[in-house]
Image 1 (cartoon, rainbow, N blue to C red):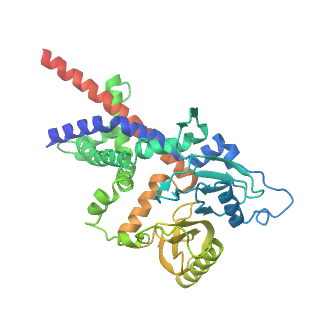
Image 2 (image 1 turned 30 degrees about the horizontal axis):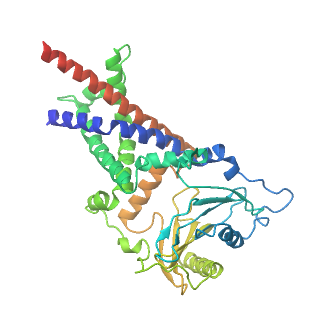
Image 3 (image 1 turned 90 degrees about the horizontal axis):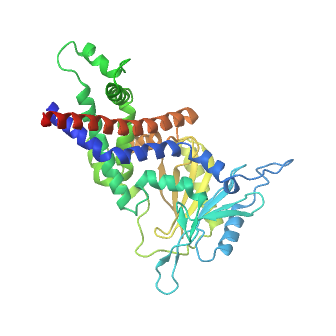
Length: 405
């Protein structure tokens, strides 16, 4: 059994080492993605706050800004409206517009636009995650491209996510085989296991590498398992994660996550943006009063033609994340009727576990201290991948010498 575990650990480590090293290092970077975006792209993310006035009252009407943006980018649909926050630029997503004859969606050449919420000036735009196009380097997309690498090795959807999901699944299994291999034989158990948790002083280079690999893997075993299994959740949710977790937890019906798709997209809702916003805001406030939570901040309003519905997203006292709102309320784009609601960390046991795995993986909880910890774990994952290859290579050379003798 131990020999089989050793082989599985060795080959699993080799199969995933380079990809996990890349995922670990890019994950360390993404723990500070907002700060890096502001540092690398100040022209898009930083705005001058007016002095001597109420910064909130100085913000322009976001619905007027959306209408102006729609006029400036007529080839796309400004179906996403972010609500302005003092001191930050306002970001709009541009969505595909259907072809006038075929009805097929036309992907816009720019899908992310940044606006100064105080002046209404367009600060710039970009095609999110595209690092090279039109014969030039798009430096403003460096952080989004790192995100694409981390999530799917920048491969086309869905192949990249499936591949990284398979890597995450092997990593999860490898966590258990690696732990099994550190367990000592015989008694006393704890005394024999203690050396595996430390690094021997004055040891040879090979022993130092082995101790480094084994000790860090043990001390951070729980964290590594959380990141491995949450990666499976993010990439193979329906294929692997939910079937496995459903053996222990109950999940909300997937149909309750968002409204069903219509037979054909409803491109033009009867409710305009202001009316839809008022209906959604009033419905959420009534729900907050009856269920005892607070609406802290509006995040965005998004019209989804595929569902013919508006998605109103806010940050509430029920959210797990530090800054980003994930409390969702959907209303019908024609009638304004509430279709469904989703609150992060609420629902059945499986939904709550999934919400916690997500925020622990992304570092969007626990403030700066936890994000630093996430960054360090990413570096450790890369280190474990490299040291695993070094240990394997040394053992392989040793076996080759024994066969030669």
